[in-house]
Amino acid sequence: KWKNIMKKKKKSKDKSKKESPPKLKVKEEKKLFVLDTNIPLQDPYCIYGFKDNDVCIPFTVLDELDKFKKGSDSINLNAREFSRSLYDIIASSKSSKKNSSNDEMTSVSSFPKHSKKVSLGKDMGRIFIASPSEKDLEPITSKSLADIPDHRILLTVCMLRKKSKIPVILITNDVILRNKATYFGIICEPYRNESVADMKKIYNSVIIKKLSDKEWESFYKKPGTDGLYPI
Image (cartoon, rainbow, N blue to C red):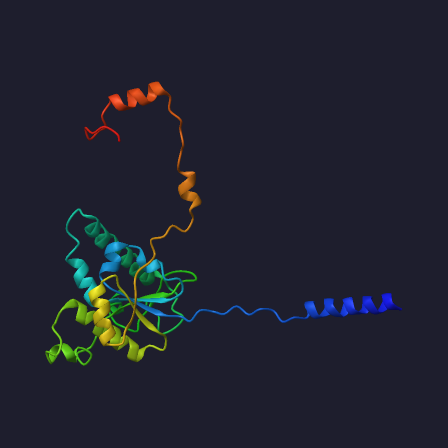
């Protein structure tokens, strides 16, 4: 009898384990990220690093990038590469025949308008360019604020906050701009998309070779291409 009672208890425990409700995956709230000029200058492919969230490029940022397009420094190369990448998105959107909603655009002429969005790809968000209206620029026209790119970007974010149903976040590595954003109550985050996703790719590309004494001797006798000896 005792054995039968213990078996019944075990069965009831097993049933309770099986019948426990499945854990629900909490989906992250979608956000709208507004990029400052220094972000594409740092990473020309930055627009693909925000998962399924939407990305906004202020029209002022495009004006700023235009000033960096000439030159051979890394920021000049990044400015040109970002412009090409953005144009590729516009071109692919134009050639696409799919237009499932009024919020998506397929015409290049309508791209520089806010509220029109282009898909960045499968399982990713959408991108659009925003330009504030004259009413949104009132603090500048009334000379309450100086007419500089930083202030136009901040006023663009303020405009988007009024119209957006999702959190609007300014992405910038400019500390001064982040300080100014606190005055408007704007949420800011630094750009952190330079970490390597797969460390194995780095270690697989490293070759360790043991040199003999003769190889080391010949190695130090010959200078490098820059005329310097190895350290």
